[in-house]
Image (cartoon, rainbow, N blue to C red; front, side, top):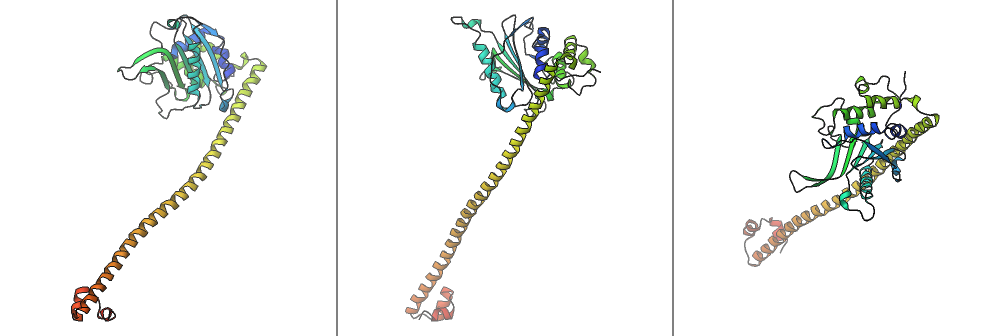
Length: 322
């Protein structure tokens, strides 16, 4: 029984798509939003630019750079673990490739579109139905939006790719594209039997054959193992960091919550004290005023009973004023 290696790893990804242009062509035609009649006929591999690794996930990117008969450029990158800066990184790659098309003194009308395709091994969009994300330059004030066909960014979330093709689950990916993405997601060390629908497509069947362990040298297999080992270590470090950050955040949140509670309690206490003070002040002022009225009535030799009826004071309170 054949044993397979995951095409999402860089060594397998590059063996399949970086050395077999007809497979790369089939893959791109099936996945990219190309206009009818402008499919890729042939491709030419270009040396990839030397780019810095993403610090959080070293050695998690496998990339292939090529161009077709029209001069359009295509960058394909496989990103196992999602990190937020992957989007700006791929944008940086596409814009850099776009600007480097022209030599000194050449006209801008020679510029051709650049497509950046990022295959993501994890989900990053909370919407379970959104797995194919196409970004391009548009005029947002026009409806329908007018687009500039120069830069295209496509991000595909492999875990959310449907099993079967339906026009409802993607308006841009063809049926062949779904099968290619299933190949990327489903072929790995745990594969016991390759789905028949994948083997029915000649190009995908060839890619399956290139994924067999027997197709790799001992040094390639060692690199393959080290690739996954490093990814597991990196994931463990990131997870540990997230847990420590969550704990520190919780402790900080409790401290801030207590402080906020104290401040709010003091503020509420002050307000309540002011209210009580005003109420007590009114009561004391009223009592003092009644005593003053009683004193005046006594000076006018008014009867005690009349003073009691007028002020509400007791006979003892009035006699104490004498």
